[in-house]
Image (cartoon, rainbow, N blue to C red; front, side, top):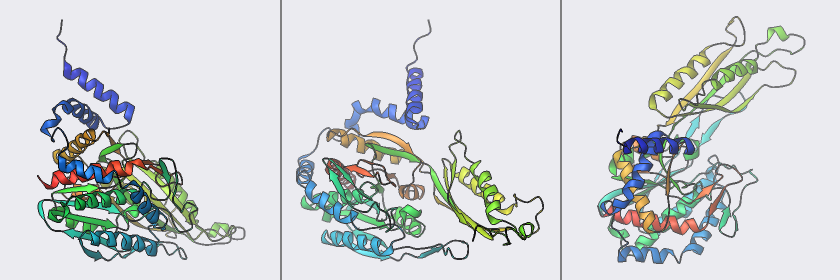
Length: 449
């Protein structure tokens, strides 16, 4: 009889986990290996909390009401990415808190991001300022990251904070004003324990993450090589830490046609909407679930009147891709579609397309160093009674930028929440203190390495 092969069973179990959880096989193997390694957790971290760490935990246990109050204050300020005044107000509130903790602040100017558009639509984004807070000290240099903007515009009906029992609702309670509060109170706990002044910590808060960090990317990539570890305070979802993420891209294209009377001279017109529709069909065909590439034409507009052949039409595209080359290939496909005339049998030169594309987030590909951060955090969570899972995500964060720039980066240190980018956004109130404890101890231990 052939002897049993434990690795074969291990691989089968990992494959089952991958299929059941919709994660990559590599991450499923990581999860299985992590579970097997938990019995050796003492090799990763101390077997119990130190007296100093217990003091961090004890202080944070008294701070839930204050954390909720601060989150309510932030949530009730509309901070949609396009609301520069509101995002700047969030920046002022958080800057005041960081200055109180002894950080030196630097402001990086936002900029106006211009894209092609039809006459009258004037699509441009006036990005608010970004904030870098620094504190020099000893030990490992840590870069803490969070974004101040949300996806909800000032005219959204979803505007204010509310709560029911252990659940809170509102724009940004999970994504990611809640994470900013967790980050701030972890730092407050370290200050109360007399540790913060000796730590080398930077905090970067940008104003345009939800639109792709189009203005702040260069600053994040400048900061990455100046630090040893990166920590991102996006939501932990349903108590999961994200190990790897897809890359993200976006494209905006404008089709210019020829206006004409829809009844009296239909044949003389060249409909931009018709051409847009043909292009959309080809773009949507690029989605391939097997390879992991997805494309979504999320916004379209165009035309002037019901009885006018449309002279202009435009669309906004979202792209997700697991591997860097897939993003490059997708851009080439976009450009081929943009350069072609698909809706008329003969190209008379009366239809043209202008476009803007940006691969704004590279895939976040795990490294041994980022897996070390993940393992260490999960082990600390176990000491705190927090059972944290591991998952992959198609959503992007600034951690993808810093990891690609060479900084080992950990995602998902924020609150436990669901329903982001919708009026169903909610988060668990008790996770504010839970994640602040986790982060405070993690920062304490990383700084001392």
